[in-house]
Amino acid sequence: MSLLSRFTSLFTREDRASVDWQDLEATLIASDIGPTLAKKISDRLHDEKKLTLEVALGELLISADRSLVSAESPPTVILVVGVNGSGKTTSVGKLAARLHAQGASVVVVAADTFRAAAREQLQTWATRIGVTCVGGKDGADPAAVAFDGVSQAVDQGADYVIIDTAGRLQTKEGLMDQLGKIRRVVEKKAPVSEVLLVLDGSTGQNALSQGASFTSAVQVTGLVLTKLDGSSKGGAALAIEATLGIPIKLIGTGEGLSDIAPFEPDSYIAALVGR
Image (cartoon, rainbow, N blue to C red; front, side):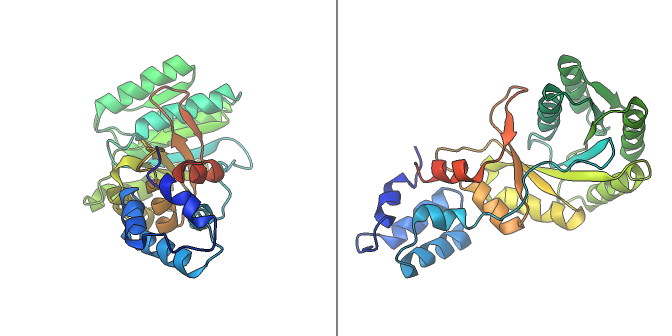
């Protein structure tokens, strides 16, 4: 059940004498919206007597195209970044499965050459899906592996190539720099159309910290939010998008290969307020 559902009806009328404003702010914070946005929402609702909670929350989401960008000529290159444990490699597999199910030909690239488990997972999923997986040896140059993957996609006439990268911890500046190198090397063969940052929605403010670090290092074009609790602490998506100013394009909805979906703002806000 949504933490905010008990407040929803209080803002359907202009008389707000029964609203406990401190309780509202505390509940917004408990929903992972964060203290700054919680106060902003509370102040607006207090001052604008005709404003509803649902509208106030919805207006914090940015107005942007949430569809995946397609290259003018194939392949469309998608670079996927994020820290280890965020669900990055899993999201690559899910996105590949979704595009393949839509009839597109897909190549996935295991450019995380520092974790054998990540490469093995992506290869296993590629086999299950029926798409090509390009990988490299332990310790191989990630940029070189990414270039080989894009080259193979070009040779095959593939529609999409999705590049999985190593987990980038914001405290390891050298690894962040490596992302820029991967992009520069790949674009010698084909332009990168999307840089998708995968964030774990259950980590709240930590996800915001990661997001700020990545967006300062690479040109992130969209967010993939995983492990989002839509019933209680689901405000993380609102806080992340409002703070970073980057559209959430996809959300992970479960553990299966088909459990990925486009982010729908109206449905998200309705669930957040318990409607």
